[in-house]
Length: 396
Image (cartoon, rainbow, N blue to C red; front, side, top):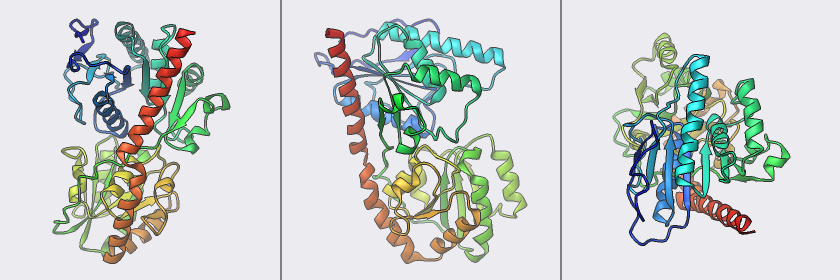
């Protein structure tokens, strides 16, 4: 197959590796998302891209980022990565409108150049842009909601744009039935529920910590509820002097969380080390895991912790944790948003080594339901069925 990316669209950078010569492609899939930094959607996209290209598909990842960005999750060299050069950032309203137009124009140019058989976009605003960019090109677009649309609000303009564009998408993927139920019936009829995979089974806790480490992972945002976690840990920390709390991630709330930690006198017991140095590496230094989110689309890191065999405590927030954890069997579910109950459950878990061992062993077994190969097959079956259906329509 010849390299069709010898020349770029203006302002769009690319990297490309040609597939094996003579190989018959099963189709071209283009994934579209804001960026390729550390995060759940980025992990899912690179996982699927790597798996699909290994299974005979041509795969393109289109990112809004600028040229020179480095994906946090490794990409197979056979995957094409294209940068639109219009990164997502805080801007004035006028600058924001120009950036949105730039993303639509840039993606539309890429779609015209490569003519993929299917576009799969991730995250609400990116989904809107993908549908607008593909209008009139005859290319099906599947939009994927990666959060809880009932609690993750968008402003009125984006809500109207979502209603308009989603109705014109080929279909919708959510991670839970609860998220799918948010959308109107005409979208649910064209909807699929595909949970996140529980990855990093090959990464295991080393249990070499001088002090035991309770671990949390996520962006430092209000959604992740780290303020509730810090308060809960501080309430029970005096009873468990051998434990410390480590919260991996970065985000806008760092100053507020640091101030909260200092105010509670917990600077020697609670750490905010930033983003983990490599994907999944936070597992190696963990003795237990906690998810304190106010809401989730699924709870990717909870599945990863379970797959690694870590004992887990989680708020029973919508959506995701209750689909993964059987309370008291392979983890502990805490009433949604109840910091006092979270402190009690953390204390119980931190103080009982036998409980931790039992929960961890059962968690590893339960997480097999979401093994990467199983989830990857669901995505590939969906992709194959859409490509086959659209080809039949084109022939007719």
